[in-house]
Length: 217
Image (tube, rainbow, N blue to C red):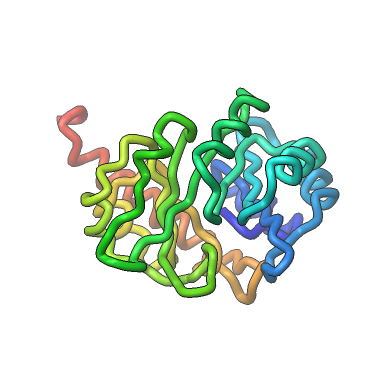
């Protein structure tokens, strides 16, 4: 769950079984939080939940400072960050997971994700919208994922909500999903009923995938 801005939302997501909480460190975002707030909330989280920091074109030094202050375990890079920066971050903190986000739908030419294969741990696919770096709340054509042939674990984002999450998971079969505006009353404030519905549908999608897998037949 990305765009975490309140303790109550974090606690609800954790109680439902979230795997990671995302904190946005982009000042122009309506979901921006200060590193000190993230650190205070993160200190109260149970173990095994990823602490994810979302950045857009921040410098190495800025990311390094916020990671250290907030206690992050993963960075999610939504700008035009280079493979060199990803490598630098990985060399600085080898225990930190590096995720690079790519926007889909800008043109018929898919992004060059292969240039990042050696320097990231996962990739995130979101919907392209002019002037917006992530968090568009719009769905892209999931058939485009096959054209990319990702070799790293795929996180699917872009307009996911309780009503389409089952189709998204069973169609794309991502490693994980990233949800934000699809479970909000307003930017940064989650609707707990929508969260419950989304998690219930995620479990149903998982059950459907597992039951159709040859491993279980």
